[in-house]
Amino acid sequence: MSNDPRCKAPDWANERVTESWLLGEGAQAGFIEGPLVYINDPATASKLGCPAEECGCFFNFSPQRAWRPRLSKPCKMRFKPLVGDNGRDWCVCTVEEPSWLAEQHPKPWQHEREGLTLAHLTGGNPTHQLHIHFFWIWMWLVHIVERAAGQVSLLLDCEDVNVCMGTYGIGLAKAILSEPIQLRSLTEPLVVDRIKFGLGGTFPFSLWEMQPWGGPQPEYVSMVAAVKAHYNIEDHWFSKPLQIVLAKRPGGHKLSTRVIRNVDELAASLEKRGFDVQVVEFGKLSFAEQLQAVANATILAGISGSDMVTGVFLPRGAGIVEILPQVKGHQVINVELHNIMRLAQVRYHRWHSPTDADLLYDDQGNLLGDTLLRQIGTTDVDIPGGTANIEAAALEAGMLQTDRVGEIWFTQDPVNATMFPAPSIGEAARKYKEREEAAWNRTEGVEKAKQKAKKHRS
Image (spheres, rainbow, N blue to C red):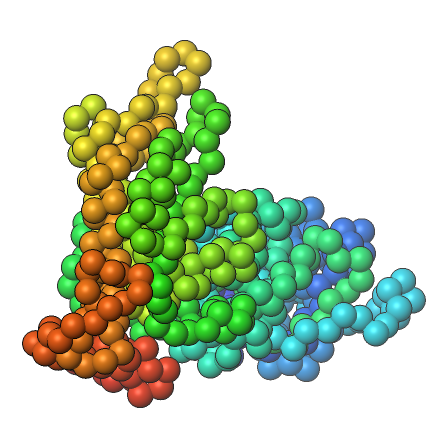
């Protein structure tokens, strides 16, 4: 168990709560049995004994429930959001249902069968939403409560869903849980049969060191597949002709970060090589539109940043090219995307552009950003070098994706996929594709991967 008090129940609760409530810490906690009634009315909640000025108030109007703490004060079961999800506490109060409540709030009330209550989350950053929150939510659904995507409702205790979750978080919530039910916007009581208070995690990869070992994370791969299925994105190998998507970050502001000034020139150079090239500003798209933008891409290329995280939703066999410029002659290194793509079974390529980036300064001339990467303002990339590296990554993917054993794509005609015999490479491609197919298998392949991981740990 963690020593963090937010990760475990109060001492008194452990003695009175059923095993279904607490199976461990973090993603290992199960449901509380209800029904519980949430009341978003401070005056009513206070009248019923809940400290509404400091808590979100849930009421147990069924005193016969076995898990009910037998305490003198009505609100003694109190839960805090877990790590990475700061917000107010949630109180569960055990009281008799007063007759005047139904008069004040006529029934029937809104009803949800099962719910997961989250608080402020960590804002709109795609990397944070995907890895600090929804990966662990998916792990909890799959391994602890054994629910499929869409079976548990998201109860969001946040004043502004766009600030707390952003476009990416809302899109993931719709696919994995539900459209967020905003507790602080409810005008009538909400009844929930079973509820989980809080769920948090941390990055499931290293932020500081490259992790080249191991293979894909089966649960991560299955999460990606579930999200794609929700948005009707076919889970397939990328198709011909080879398509390249260039991620464009917004510019035009003195504090714009990591902007490639000549991205359109890079796109034109790749088009001359025969590729279908799309320049996409992901920050202007809905989550569903972001998935659609990479649905048929062979390569997603762009400067290091959260835009590139959408690469986890690329077709099978596709990859990303992370562009890293120099800062004052020093080469920028970043391992996050490499480690993320390893989890998702997406091929990763890094290209170090030899050009120096402009840096970010405030009005007083102070350098902004705590790392070289975050100090980058705008930069040009070397067009011949960028074209060659992105093309090489696309052609590598094309060679390993061939549908006919013993043949690969002729590099002089990548778009029309002219073939020539190459038995040895073709055999390697066939074996590679077999391994990829096995890892993507939703049942047998995942179970084998789990058993293999368990064997290695032991």
